[in-house]
Amino acid sequence: MTGRVLHTILFNTRLDEAGVRALFEQAQQQLGPIPGVRGFTFGQATGPGARYRYLLQVHFADAEVITQYRDHPVHQDFARRVFRPVAEDRLTTDFLLL
Image (cartoon, rainbow, N blue to C red):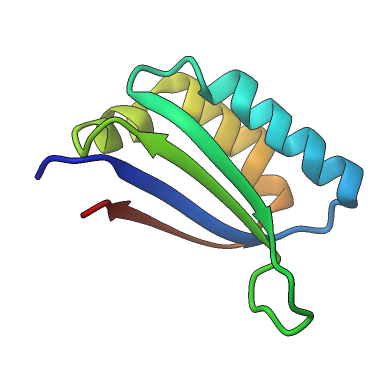
């Protein structure tokens, strides 16, 4: 499997807007240097009836990065200490770009 991958997380959080922006900035600073990470996309749902309010995508160079990223100690620490405590309601999927 080759090609770029989007590690996509849809989530809800109890953080306010400033807290969400700070979370996105922290994700970019801490996760950006992990080998194979090529960029980020952050977003907020536009409709009031959306199941998930926020989007965080980490752009991977290719599918081989999925396992490396998942097991990387910086990602493990960020997920355990920063992200999961404030984003208990989440859905995560990796998408191979065609």
